[in-house]
Each structure stands twice: as structure tokens, then as C-alpha cells.
Length: 320
Image (cartoon, rainbow, N blue to C red; front, side, top):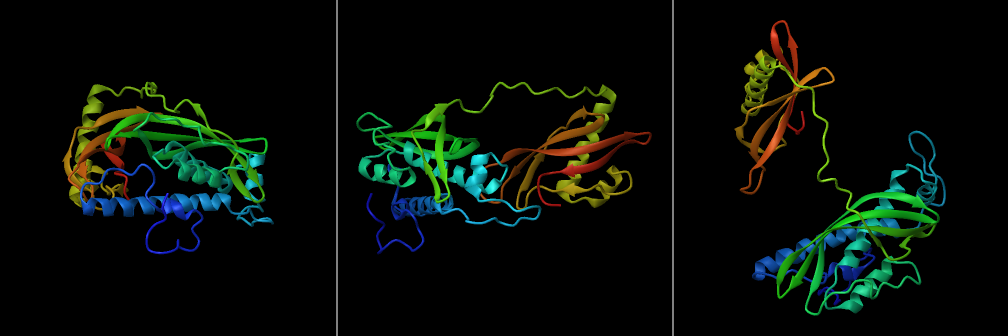
């Protein structure tokens, strides 16, 4: 891959060629769109590279103090199966950066092989590990670590990726794939120890959730009305209504995230879990930017008593 124009690579960047447009580059639609895509891609790869650098830098030679007790070097913690988060985060960063390179295949196969070798241990050959028909390129547009487990000499990281295939400037969906990436962990750093192997995507799309206890119809209707009114009062800023619905005092509230604008409030769904009365109220809202609207669930905690149903808490997902 060619180096980015404008002189030598910035200091501190481990893999300067990652700042160039990865292969294959999405088709551009006009000069402005091309510039935005190049800038966004450079930013993304800079962030991924920083994660990879953290994983490949030498581990600390001595103990690192924490609030509770001294912790050993991060790679050793990974090998020993410790819950030390920094070692797992370093391994997951390296695995995610590697799998994106592994799944992204364009015309410049030599540059791809060089990038893979920079993330792999000596002797690991990945040059012909992914094969595509002539005229077809592949691009991993989303790569996410999904867990890790210690093994002898290192760690295995499960990574989930969504793949697009490109033919004649047209992208098609290549599906969601999951791979286990083996990593060697040494005091001097972390590197990919062998070819990734496919595994099942850790998603149970037909998972059956437990049903909450049914609420008597009369109580459900009353609680539903109270929850709906509480959410309307929340999004309109009606403090007097909140105090009335809270039984004389306004309940603790978390509004919608900053900048979200409410379009409509739907009917509540009331449930009872472990003796507690609760409701979810659907709210359609727009984010700070863009024309799209989203259906959000505002959670309302309720309490039934001799005086009726009172609101205990409203959670719209934002800061209090």
C-alpha cells in the first residue's frame, strides 16, 4: 500500500501504512464524499493502531500499584487467567486489529501480507489464508472482541466481524462471522500465534426470555395510566405533575440523553418482578443530529398502596 502523501509518517505511529486507505476502499461519490471517507478511515485506523500499540508494547517489569493490592505485569496476568482487565484489553485490541486486516482483502495482496506479519509472531504464514474470486474484494466494516480465555503461553480472543464484499463498485452483505484468534503473550509484548479458526457467532436469536409475573387487569390499567402520565410529565418538564404522581414528592428521574427530542409517548406495558411493580413506556425520539427517530423504552418504577399507584423512579437513560 502506498504511503500517505504529505511527507513521512507521524512520529509514534507503529504502522504508518495503516493511515492510508485500506484495501478495498469504498467507492467515492464526488470529491467531498471522498475526502470525508478518507478522513474518517484515517481516524478509525489511528484508533485501532493505538490499541494495537498498547498490546505490542513491552509489559511493565515490576509490580503496578492499585487501590487494593499490587498487580503483576499485564501479560502474566493474562496467562495466569487473572481478572486483571488491562491484559485482556491489550489482547483484545491486538486480536481486533489483526482480524480486520485478515478479513480485508483487496488488490494489493503484498501490502496486506506485510501488515499481517507486523501483528503476527515470527514463522506464522498467513499469505494464502483468505481466497476470493477474481474481481472480488472484501472489507470488514465492523470488528468487535467478544471475550477471551487464557491458554498455555497466551490467550485466545473471540472476535465478531461483519463482512462486505465488493464487485464492480457494488457492496454485498458477506454476513456476520466469528473467529477465535490465538495470541502469544510474552514479557516483551503480544502477537498472533497462528491462523484464526471460525467459531459460532455468540448470539441466540431465538432465546426465550422469562415471562414476568402477570399483573391483575385493574391494577395494570391504573399503573399503565400513571406510568404514561409520568413519562409525559418527564419529557415536558411538568414538575407539579411529577410531584403529584410521586405521591406528594417528585420521584428521582433520569431524562432522555442530552439533545434527544421527544416525538410521541406510547402506552405503557406493566409488569411485576420479584414483588416490584414496573412499567416500560415507549417513547419515539430524535437524536441531536439527523432526521431519524428511534423508539426508546423509558422505565418507570411504581408502588401500589392504599392511596393508589405512585411513581418511585423514572429512567430515560440520560444523566440525572
